[in-house]
Length: 522
Picture 1 (spheres, one colour):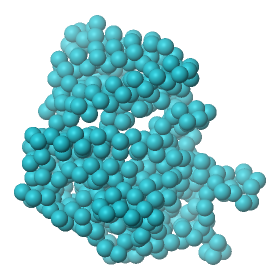
Picture 2 (picture 1 turned 90 degrees about the vertical axis):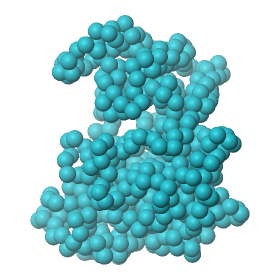
Picture 3 (picture 1 turned 180 degrees about the horizontal axis):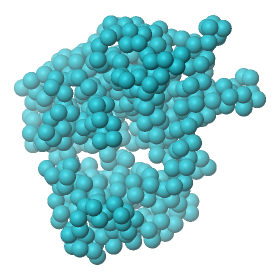
Picture 4 (picture 1 turned 60 degrees about the horizontal axis):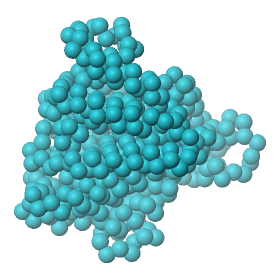
């Protein structure tokens, strides 16, 4: 089966001309359009996991993370396309072009708001509960909105990328509630990310790839793959990008935490070795025992083992898990963390060796499955390495994300974003300020109103119940203008860097003494 030529089709065909539109390949043009976008530039000022603070260039941001995902993704795609065993299968599934994978990897985080995943959760809550937008906010859907709608502002065509690249950015090729039908959250089991949050029933999928305003773009992007993939399945190129993202996240974040002194050899060793020592006894404990003993060494590893069995029984294996714990303990505890990072050349070489070893090990373990389980893509890690990635990510979660000092900063950042959204809303609805609101915010309101008007009254548009409106009353479902203002404010705030969000709130709160500043563009 030949790869469809429509992979290279653009929905509008009259899209913007970017400085890099010089390549012969349409997919290279896409890559160049993405890196020429100001949305790509801003990723250098957006938190990856921890704020760079005083660490200078040592800590990854969303830009350096995206570049490394692109590097890993391209390496995977080149290895797979050079493998005669997989070539026919890749063509049958719709193709695997390294240029497409690289472009999708560069674009996959364009929609991440200030302060990373914390900002994503805050903006989702505000979008749904404050402004009544049923779709809320989701970083992947926002990335897709940028490349299809607001990437260059006002034109409603975004970057007008090819179908293959747009499809490759879709880790979750469904909307929050209604597409495809029946919705993927009702599958048993649902695809990864498609389930509703247990603490937010009725909200739709936890992760999704597009808002309803971009559904037509999603459907156009998926047309070349009709009959080759189920509507909810990632394309091969999206699966490569997703796997590369997992690899980069598992490895490079550990580098950061080691460099800034957050990861301590003793605490990591204690956790892993305690599970290895007590594994048999821990397996025999009832689930209720873990809630009361959450911090005992080794118990968090056992919770991870049980979680993998519960969610990913298609691949989870106790022997592979035990081997992964031992291998990660050897490489991380006895290797990377054996000496504190002191900034010396020897310390940098130690980090480089760790990263190179794991990157090569994981890339070499990539497989292509013709008929993967629902919770996996066509491109997957071999079982041994899949378990190793889960343990590497566990170290990040257990020893960084659960830290009280990180929680302290994130609570402040959440309050900052909520206050900024309210301040911008008050400015936007002030009748005396109609000629002085930021021009980009004005354009975003007009664009959102044009997009939402055809959807007025649909269940996918308005969240119910709505808790607040501009005047304190409940929002009428037909008040498209109010919904558009909410979407525009969320779009505007999501496009700021961390420092721009801080500086803008300082100005709106009267705390800034600078009248003219380059901290943000109005």
